[in-house]
Image 1 (tube, rainbow, N blue to C red):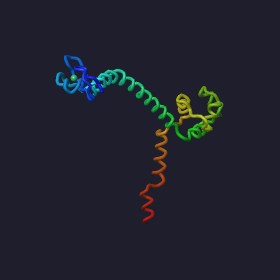
Image 2 (image 1 turned 45 degrees about the horizontal axis):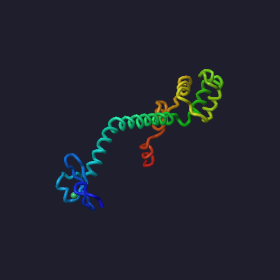
Image 3 (image 1 turned 135 degrees about the vertical axis):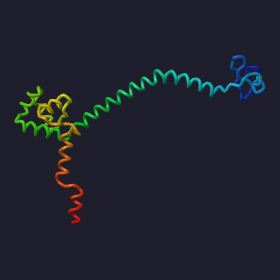
Image 4 (image 1 turned 45 degrees about the vertical axis):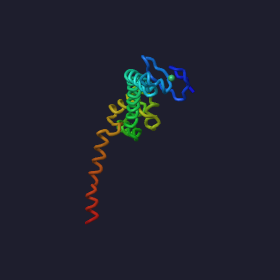
Length: 174
Ligand SMILES: [Zn+2]
């Protein structure tokens, strides 16, 4: 039971009313004296509104943008770099190096890198860093990234050079 703040009578379901700017929990009888206040909805609504607008405007949006935005792009970039390097980069490096007539040590010297790094790359024990990859590509005239022009041309040339699906079907029919 709650006491009515107007008349002091006990009531089980007080009504919150606004009387001359003050909010009072009153009994049903006294509720007529004031304007009924829907305390829960008004209270939560105003709190929600103020926190949302203030934190959402400055805090929320900026931190959300900063955190998710930068981490997303950074992760995306890293992923892209890793995916871009071709699967057979070790073979490509070794083949191109041998074609150039260079030993691992000689190639390492040319690139100003350690021979152990070249050995690791040719064993596919380590992915080339961006800078090493760039140096290898320039030095050996190779492409170590997926979707390179060399790759596409080679695959396209191979498939059209052999036979097309139409050829196969025709041959079967005739
Ligand atoms: Zn009352």
